[in-house]
Image (cartoon, rainbow, N blue to C red):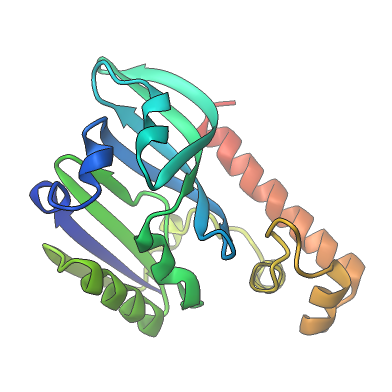
Amino acid sequence: MREVRVRYSGAQLMRTDFKELLDICERITLMGTIWRDNEEGFLRQIFEIRMMEGQVIDSINDVHFMQIEDVLSVREEKGRVIHTAVVRNYHELGLIGGVIETAVVVPGSCIGRSEAVVIIRGSPEGCKQMVEGLRLWREPNSISVVDSTPEDMDYFTKDLTDARITAFAAAWKMGYYENPRKSSPTEIASSIGISRVTLTGHLRSIENHLASLMAKRLNL
């Protein structure tokens, strides 16, 4: 697996439409992507949002490319209020990964007033395609590449079997997690040559695994 980190300076960001967000947020950090809605053109994601002093979370809804769906937790750190929230992200950068199946933007990626760091993991070719998309949007300040990402950094897939990952990948690509669903468990199971019962067991294990990680991250 390859990891690529693409960095933009705060000055670069303030010359883009992200200025609208950074006028009210000091930093917004990706914690996970729940699903991609291709019809309406948004990503449903979980972000940790560090507000600027005096700003409230509802201000996010005034940013033209973001919408708060739910606030999961609130805490204070060094005088700043930090929210963990489910967000609809309509920004054009979210479209870059729509046709790239072998690389993803992973948790820890962040946009802040000092800099933005986009962390990409996947195959060398997938990472290359993702970086090319970012460069078409804006030329980065720097790009760093790491081959063979350490296993302990693979936060979401650690301890999952290849069979479960294969089942999830098939379900995702066939629109199982879209609303409304675009495929049934029977159709997905047939596409990868397993039974419906086996598929649903794999997906349930994946969902329980991700829920457990999220609960730990939120100290629940």
